[in-house]
Image 1 (tube, rainbow, N blue to C red):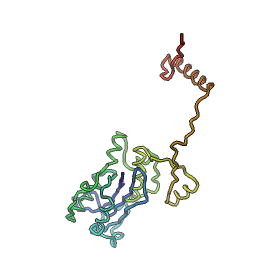
Image 2: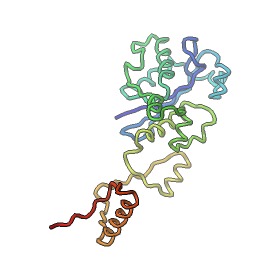
Image 3: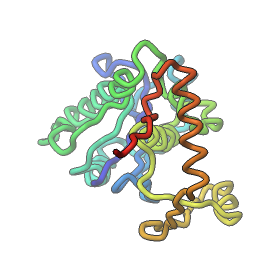
Image 4: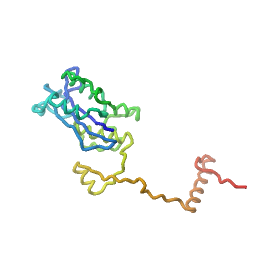
Length: 241
């Protein structure tokens, strides 16, 4: 299964007011494993950026002056995400902006859902944690995801953080990786390539001996007595006539 964790940064909050995308960040996940495959692009929006937006992401109009327009990168972007499931936090915001950009270009596939399915992790988080804060920072804290580098929003950084958060929310990795000193050095340098250890069929089963079984039964009997016969794990020995 191919999933793309996606985030965007924009000139403002509302595409209907003429606001545009200025950064796209994508992280590929295949069969619940984050790959090294990324898509990252800054985009010249051909308009000024709202002051409030600059305070959020730190991207200025001057920085984007020599960057390509959305029309210049749209084919590469669509080819990267085509056929995948998009994982987005607060999906209506990002999808709305992408659709707006596609409409401006009169693209035949002017809705992103024509080429991708979309999973909104904000909706997922609200179902899992009703009544709690479910923004990305809150989820990182809840699932012990390191977001210490997130002083400002950034599309690729936020997509990478969301990828880790989504996997933690939905059950973690499908394989066990044991970290070595080499892995820790790679993690610090940002190029983690964990060693995957296949454990199937290698686990040694150690059964309790007679003494341990008797000690266990005695402990359950004591709990049963103290709880007035409510220990659900304890069954009195049955005498065979």
